Amino acid sequence: MSKVKKLITVLALLISITSIYSQGIDSTQVGKEYPYILPILGQKSYERGYKLPKPFGVMLNSIFTKQNIVLENFMLDFVKSGETPDLKDLSDIIDFGPSTVKVLTANARADVWILPFLSLGGYYGRFTSETRISLEKPLELNAKSESDGAYWGFNVLAVAPLGPINLGVDYSWSWSQNELLDKPVLVNVAGVRFIKNWGIKNKSDMFVGAWAGAQFQFLDAGTVGNVRLADVIDVEGGARQDLDDWYGSIENPNELHDYLYNKMNEGLDDLENTTVHYQFDKRLERNWNFIVGGQWQINRDWQIRTEAGFLPGKYQVMISANYRFGF
Image 1 (cartoon, rainbow, N blue to C red):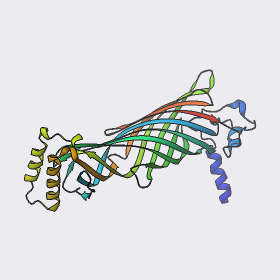
Image 2: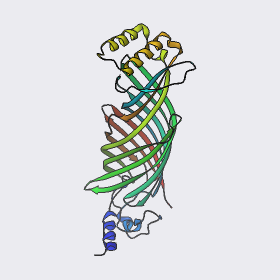
Image 3: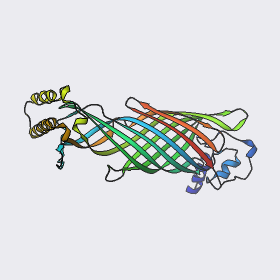
């Protein structure tokens, strides 16, 4: 068998795939002309009675995420008014407590089914984020950094049948930009979902669907910020004693220990006029989490969807509305 014939055979088998949005077979359409220009091989699928979603879609999404982060390559300096920061890498001599990032985002996404089993899409969105970091030693310190920005990207979705359910696999590439970043940060997200749809009696185009699976997120990003020392530390709460206890517990203090001890003492003497400048790299504590979701297809034009991701230290919630059309 030639390579071309093998390819046609494979595509013919995949034609029977129903997407996340499709719902079984409609025998009344067998032999009729497929009304839209896409997907490729749509006519073949239509001739066999398979119902396909309308090929073009526009989706509005809102997503909230909260997840723990790990801080690395931490640099710090305590600066008086008018001074220029001279950050030093203190990663080896300080201990962090729990640190988190919260992100609230909204985006618009457009997609098209290129093949009955393959969809391509692109999106643009805006976000607001809050990063909280906590320091436990040499003393307790909490800092918060807020930023707004934009992101854009594209994604690929493939769907395959597994008996009574469908397997959906997607991958997204996005680039985020805000005022704290010198260049956009690449974020990769992959998802695997096992999907089941149920038709509604006497409603040929209406169904409800549910799915479960896992999502993987890959992020490496840097954060730069500053905070007034008086806003994050309480001298009356024993901060100076904590600092002395930390320094006194070190058997052989080195240059960095001395630098940090002296700088922090100077800052505690003049809280109101001291600003903490910091810079660090952050990565997610967990790169993956479980996901569950559901969809209500009102008709072939409109769908409403929600999804939640969860695992200790990583949570997310999404709601979206999708409008589909064809020509």
